[in-house]
Image 1 (cartoon, rainbow, N blue to C red):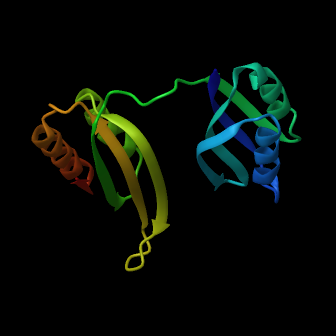
Image 2 (spheres, rainbow, N blue to C red; image 1 turned 90 degrees about the vertical axis):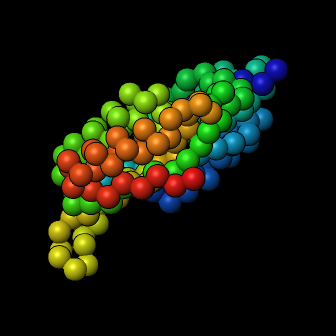
Length: 169
């Protein structure tokens, strides 16, 4: 039987870090299945889903935690995907200010919409030099969710916080 692990890593960015982690996983019979990684404020951070034979799980966990200058947190995951099947994408663009993520995602949580993936960034607007906030999210909800009501609520919030919000099928 295989175990599924959700691994969070953080450490000073350096060449060869991903290779070292991948090598440790492979040497212990693990399979690197899904990941998201980024360079943030001088650190390398990542999320991984790894499967490993159950009898090799403990050895793999110990080996990952001994990689030099890497903080590793591991939790048991579940095989398979949740029952949410209606997926759609969300894009947000607007002048950056505190509270954008909170306001938009509070409305989604209220509507029982699950955030499957979220990527955010800030950049300098080419025409004004102001800071722009961008977000892209992959969302999921139950098939009978009222997408029109979700869209309407997001449009109301967008008008209040002065950002553009688009739901895409």
